[in-house]
Length: 277
View 1 (cartoon, rainbow, N blue to C red):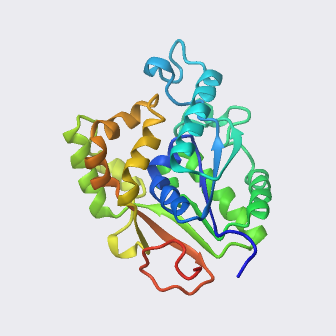
View 2: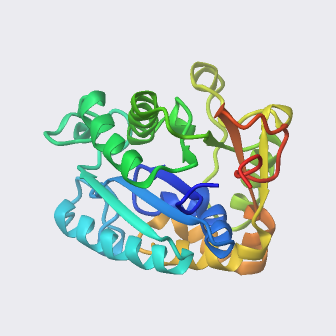
């Protein structure tokens, strides 16, 4: 037995990522008495401004957007009962290819060793048993998600104290269903050009390659409310249009691939803390 609580640390790129990717596990494990730590790497300043104004459009103020999104993030953490919120506050890098990628202070431009050193301090402080972040492609190629993976894996390599490490993913069977529901609720979901699709890493994994399926159905309403706290961001609106019941039906299981493990717990598993309790 250890003299500290079991701890889950989720490392995310932007405000609202915690709700869409890990809102269910954050709520579930908090309810089970596990300490939950959220690290948010960027300020979200490349998000939508009031009225949906986009970066680069007249009236978009990254500093004001960042302040608004910090308030939304704090509200989301309250809904999910996150124990500790840590903000690295790098500048949001925007989507791949945007000028913001190379702006001074952007997360994408930050040397990996610098970000990793800051995250390693938090790993030593909280000593998480389980760490969750994105895969090497940032799930869908976002530069800040890729950078979050890089600094997390580098920090873990220097500290070597975490029992289990996971990358978020989605089963390919769900991605098809996801597209159907998005179209049903009026969201844009265009099939990519075949040539472009061939050049891009495919999102998610075949179902049989997913190691960990965590049922968070009981916490679907909390996950929905956490996302609703980020309602300023237009990409979230189609989720909120579903209502809690349909949302939970679609998003009630969170899936991961286990990339480091010292417990020997068998896979597939249904608990991030299998082998630890």
